Amino acid sequence: MTVSCKAGRGFWMLSISIFLLLGSASAFAQKATTPMAGLKTGDTILAAAKGEISEIKIGNLEEMLKNSRDMALIDVRTRREIATVGGTIGVHQNQNIPRGWLEFRIANGAITKDTPIVVYCGTNQRSPLAARMLMKMGYTNVSNYAGGFFEWRKAGLPVEVSDRAPDTALFSKPVKVAPNVWSAIGATAPGTYENGGHNNNLSFIITTNGVVVVNAGDNYQLASALHDEIKKITRQKVKYVVLENGQGHAALGSNYWQEQGAKIIAHTDAAHELKKRGHDILDRMKRRMREKASKTRLVMPDITFDKEYIIDLGGTHIELRNLGPAHSPGDIVTWLPKERLVISGDVSFHQRLLPLFGHTDTKTWLETWEVFEGLKAKIIIPGHGEATTYDQVTKYTKNYLVYLREKVGKLIEEGGGLKEAYLIDQSPYSHLPTFRQLAKRNAGHVFRAMEFE
Image 1: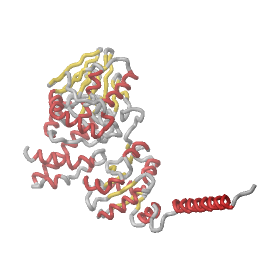
Image 2 (image 1 turned 180 degrees about the vertical axis):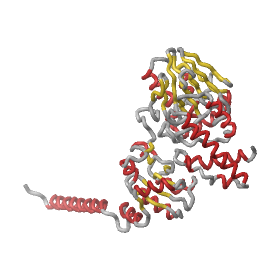
Image 3 (image 1 turned 120 degrees about the horizontal axis):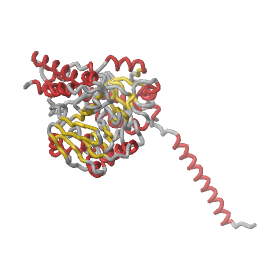
Image 4 (image 1 turned 135 degrees about the vertical axis):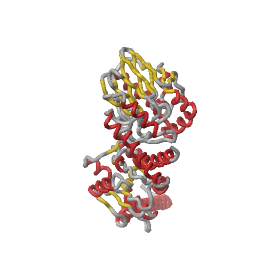
């Protein structure tokens, strides 16, 4: 075959172009896998950070947690990560501030310049960087727990999970507490997107002629999920839903239950609270729960009462009672006298530090407690936490209120002020979840109230 000079020249020019193009591509690929001059890799930055910080081992952390009630343990992983990989370290000092928000949120709590701070993550990559940043910000007592969450969990130490029932909107599925009485125990943490807003107990009583549910749930989706579990246990229809008070996690799921034909029952004070503040409560829940708040609407109770409301259903006698002022407006208990079982709502606590609100009167709560003890119940399902006995709820409700009031009373006698009230030693209760968030606030509330008693 004969090739003209012009055609030959074109062929060689094309070959040279392809050669140069391939060479350029090879050089670009090499540059893409080799750090550019002057840039540091993540590993380089991490190694430098580890050389500047103090790292502690698991035994050191256990000792610090045992001896320092004021220390801050910070998990710098994301909430979604914590929810999907098995939880976070389960101690009251623990809090979650994701690495990306650390510089902005660290100052929002009770952490001071000299507070002992320990940071950790899952694989010791983000926490060293977080520790170094806190040191640069001026925090003087910062350490990094190098073992991270997975080492802690492998050692069998306390872990707090954000969801015990991933296949449902419930934090945990119902458990049988007594014959025909069940309760889905909520998280001891505040209501979050991850736990579906299920941070209180959702209980129900099965009779031969229908079901009585105690607490409507935080949102429509949560109420529906509870109903799904009820239908797995009984074919009886839900006839009544009782609201233990006017808080969102007790009441906002009510519109789901009304759609099923159930009647909503509440104390008149709880109904007033929902009428006055319900839309604000709903808006806060929607911001927290995002798409999980879908279909939730504010509705009012169908039945209200002042002192007592009796339900006789399918041979079961149920008494709804307002025993007096307690934690929230409209607090009631659900009393089954034959079974000696009381669903106490927020009249009693035992597995989390109880919160005191602006409307909480601790003096009258203690007076109400005497009436509560007079029930002589054998089984108590509190508003939060597992079913228990009088000894436990007395220790963590009555005794806590007495303890705090005595401390504040002594402080006032000695001429102390609100600033000193925040520093009151509440260490006997420091192991309880929510202690860090609530202890100082509770002390301040009691001080302001007792100043004028």
